[in-house]
Amino acid sequence: MAMAMAMGAPREQLRVDARAPGKVILSGEHAVVHGTSAVAAALGLYTTATIRPGVDDGCVLDLPQLGVNLKWPLKVIEEIVTQGHLLDPKPAHVASYAESEWPQLGAFVEQQLGLHAVKGADAAVTAFLFLYTSILGLQPVTVRVTSELPVGAGLGSSAAYCVALSAGLLAYCGEIDLPQENGADRKTWIDVNEKKIDLVNRWAFEGERIIHGRPSGIDNTVSSFGYVVKFKQGQITRLHTQLPLRMLLTNTQVGRNTKALVAGVGERALRHPAAMGAIFKAIDEIAEEVVTILLTPSENSGGEKKKGEEIVSTEECGPHPVFKTEQEVRLQELVEMNQGLLQGIGVSHLSIESICQITASYRLQSKLTGAGGGGCVLTLLPHKLSSTSVELVKVDLEAKGFSCFEAVIGGNGVQVSCQTLS
Ligand SMILES: Nc1ncnc2c1ncn2[C@@H]1O[C@H](COP(=O)(O)OP(=O)(O)O)[C@@H](O)[C@H]1O
Ligand SMILES: C[C@@](O)(CCOP(=O)(O)O)CC(=O)O
Ligand SMILES: [Mg+2]
Image (cartoon, rainbow, N blue to C red; front, side, top):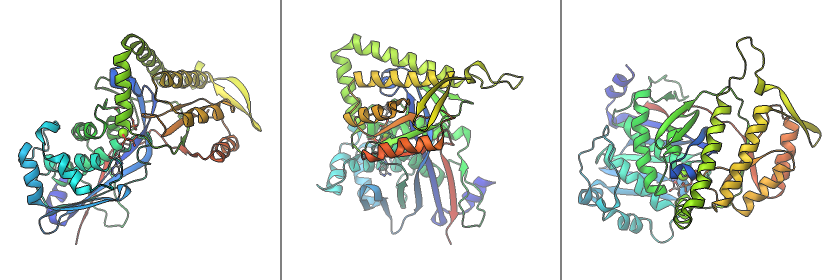
C-alpha cells in the first residue's frame, strides 16, 4: 500500500527524505581495511538527503555544509556521463565506480567548483553525480543534503552522506517503499525494508570508494543497518547486546582526511609487512574480545546478575567513586590497548593523546574513533558513573578547547519519509 501510494503520486509531486546515522568504531578501525574484524555502533546524529522534482530539465545539488550549490542542464551531465557510463539506469543492479570509465568527470567537477572549493567538495559532488546518474538516470531533480554530524571528524559523515543519498534516490525511483503520509506536519520516518537495506548499502559503498579511496565497508554498513555490528571482510554480524553502552565523544577540532590517513597506513604496511601484520592481528583479537563481552548475557535465567555484572572495581573520580563491572573493566582495558596500537600505526595525534591523558586521570579509558589524525575520541563511561562526574570530565576537556557530548549510540539505521507536494 505504501509503495502504491508513493507510486500513485507522480514524481513531479513527490518529495522524498532519507536519513542515515553516523557511527563510532568501538574497535578495529584501519586494521579492518586490511581484513581484520571491527565493531561499530550507529550514532544518534543523522545526515538527511532531500530529493525533490527538478525544474526546467535541470539537476540542482545543494550541499550547504560544503558551500556547494550547483545547477546543471541535464544535457551537460549527459555529455560527461555518456563518455564513460551507460545512461540506462539500473537501480537494482549496483554499478562499480571506476575513474577510468569517467575520464571527463574529474575535470568537470574541478571546473564547476573553481579554485576556492572547500576541501572534500570535489569528492562529494563526484559521489553524487555517480549515484544520481546510476540510480535515477537523467531525471530533473533538486537534491539537498544536510547533517547533524561534524564533517571529517571520524564519525562516519562520508558514509552517512552516501547512505542517505543512495536511499533517497532509490526511494525516489520507486525501488524502496515509502510510508503513508500522516497529513500532520511531523515527518513519518520508516526503516528501509530489510530486503532493500543491502541494496542501499552496496550503492553507498561505491560512493564511499569515491570519497575514501579504499573503504572497508564498515561505516556504510553500520549507517545502513544501524545498532551495533561486527564487520570482517564484508561479513556483517548484527550484535544484539544487553550491555549499556555509554560514552563521551570529544572532538579535537583538528581537521584531517580519511583517504590520506588510510593511504598512509597502507604505505606503512608495505614498508613493514610483518610488524604491521602483527599489529593488525592484535587489533583483530581485541575486536573479537569486544564482541564476546558485548554478547555476554547481562542476567541469567533467574534474573540474577551474571558474573560480569557485579561491581569489581571502585576508584576515586572527583567527588564520587567510579564503580565498574568486570565487563566494563575488561572493555576499558581493550580500549586502552586498541588506542596504543593505533598510535603504533601512526594515526594518533597530540590532541588525541591529550584527551586520553585527561580522561585517564579520571580512571576512564579513551580511543580515537574513525581514521584518527585528529577528529573525535570516544571515552567509555561506566554505567554507574554519576552525571556529576561526567560533567567534571567535560568541563576539564572543554577548558582545554575541546568540545564534547555524551553520545546516544546503537540506534536505528537508514530511514525514509515522503511528502506529496501540492
Ligand atoms: N553533509 C555533507 N555534505 C556534503 N558532503 C559531505 C557531508 N558529510 C560528509 N561529506 C563528504 O565526506 C567527506 C568527509 O569524509 P571523511 O574524510 O571520510 O570523514 P568522516 O567520514 O570521518 O566524517 C567530506 O569531505 C565530503 O566529501
Ligand atoms: C579508517 C577506517 O577504518 C574508518 C574511517 O572512518 P571515518 O571516515 O574517519 O569516519 C576506514 C574504513 O574502515 O573504511
Ligand atoms: Mg568517512
